[in-house]
Figure 1 (cartoon, protein in one colour):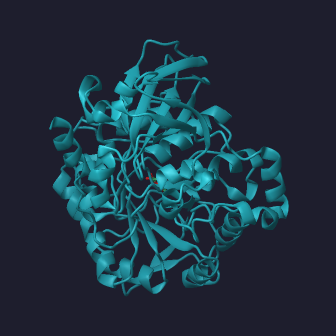
Figure 2 (figure 1 turned 120 degrees about the vertical axis):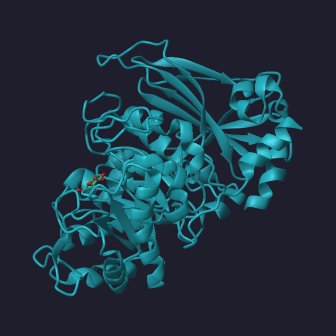
Length: 484
Ligand code: GAL
């Protein structure tokens, strides 16, 4: 009885913004993390060519998003213009080119008198700006929080300021994905879902796995007085920040843990794999942040793993939750060190398990069926713990770097045949058909007789598994079918 009640509560579909977009977390690229204000028409068009030629578009990276610094003056009529040096053919031209290649076009502004880089903001010009974006055929708006003229400090003040743009976008009649960027302020995780397709939950990410930095404050998400979420937030900082409210995201609206740093050079391969895995498992908006004109084979093999992306794009849209956090491990030079276990439901009746090793050494980590299903019932009372599961390692079939190198040298056509193409076969269909490219590799089974899942996990790395129920339809499947 307890289990059924608990599961049904979790399964209740959340009310979301009604523009019909982002039924799974948005995927794409954004220039800010690698290039800041160095934006231009060429950058956008060259990047989209790389996305296309490397197969990244086909695995789901769809939105090409231009961040700050594109603006010109605001005209007498109230309408914003663009910098004609950087964008000689204008925004509608870029949108057209991107659409021809199968992409969608994203732009940026701020709910303030200026943007964070001190260009014209949209505050009190929401209607004009939304209209002009729609007239340029824009598909996505990232909406920042700088220079808000004091209109923040309570959930209602922030809600109203961001709602003005939400309404203005809706009024254009063009479906425009609305991505809030107020860095987690004013409890955005409690109201973001009502007006946006995603909301940033943290100050800006930086290219470190766990280094604490004074510029990244607001470590306690329950602190209502946190007024400066800042920047220089590490991967572990953001994971720990969002952990208490991962369940606020769902089809139509997602927590945004900020753009990916994968490929930027400041982290090890294991750290980037962990970073990418967690952003997928926690159903964050998934925007590549590196300069793709310099894409390396190693980076490509992280970003293009369809078995891991299928977790992000899972049709149920339920984040994994943390079932264990243990600080009693070796610390690194910053005094940081912990291990975590994460678990959560996957379509159709599977279970995700992540062993996250943020200790300062390689470790053997172990979990078991009782822990994996603790949210379905305590101490092994969940019916799920009575079943047998096949265990699939989602990183086991990671692409070989030599193959990635050939692709980057222009050989994509040769590999296209076996490539997972989500524009033709949506992830839901692939998962329904148990497409082997989405399954990783079977590495064992666990069952009530042998309930432990144990693995060597590299320092600052993860093991990521899909558990497939071998005992027929589970209770979970029956409940979740209604949601799909
Ligand atoms: C920040 C935002 C960044 C980037 C930058 C542009 O507030 O969090 O992601 O958009 O502004 O100035």
